[in-house]
Image: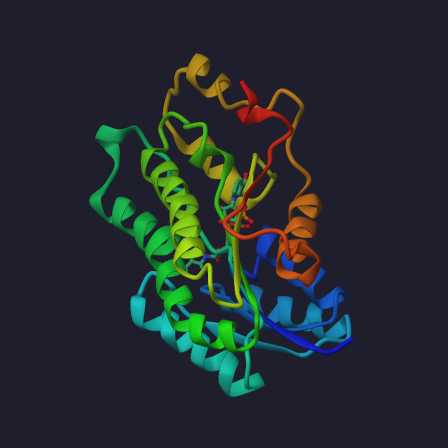
Length: 247
Ligand SMILES: NC(=O)c1ccc[n+]([C@@H]2O[C@H](COP(=O)([O-])OP(=O)(O)OC[C@H]3O[C@@H](n4cnc5c(N)ncnc54)[C@H](O)[C@@H]3O)[C@@H](O)[C@H]2O)c1
């Protein structure tokens, strides 16, 4: 098995860490990117314990220039990138009239602008490597959730951005796909509890009737889409939500 290089954002926690783990287990070396320095170092040690090489790049991806630097750091360390996994995100739910401008702008910068700038910087390397991009969107980018307008908009935007790039690069040797998970128990998901006096009827509309999605199942899909086994997938958005978006 030839060693491949994956750059994973949001790798210090939750789905990013779980996906980096799956990628290491399938023979990748990792460039781990996150704003959380301590979490990133723990994640790197975990990946090294699995027998893969890991380098870290600690930065706020909400600053556009850091996205180019993140890609540069992977190229400097490994000389190539085979897979870019855009997993870092923030969710800052609020009633629309209460939402601070800074929270709205951060949500757009981290969840939508950063994946764009990372893809822009990585595309030449990924095409050279006949590689792949996996963008993590959300089921609420398809079936919207109250009190979460900015987050839902970024996730819907990321799905269309994935498809637009898939069309633009349809003649190039690269695959570009998205995953749209339903609710998973992570620090990000717990933020939903910060909304004051929400209407329970509205929250029930996106309550997962079959329970939360297992993070491991989503990480398996990220690793699958990154792999050559997913050669039939380009411009796909795979929903893993235990039926949440079905009706
Ligand atoms: N948890 C859920 O219910 C759920 C559902 C659907 C989709 N998702 C998506 O899954 C992905 C992973 O989220 P998670 O649930 O594992 O949450 P998480 O909070 O565990 O992980 C998010 C990671 O992103 C990093 N991050 C945040 N802001 C950053 C910044 N400015 N620069 C760099 N890194 C930054 C955090 O430090 C953290 O490590 C996200 O894209 C999220 O939108 C989550």
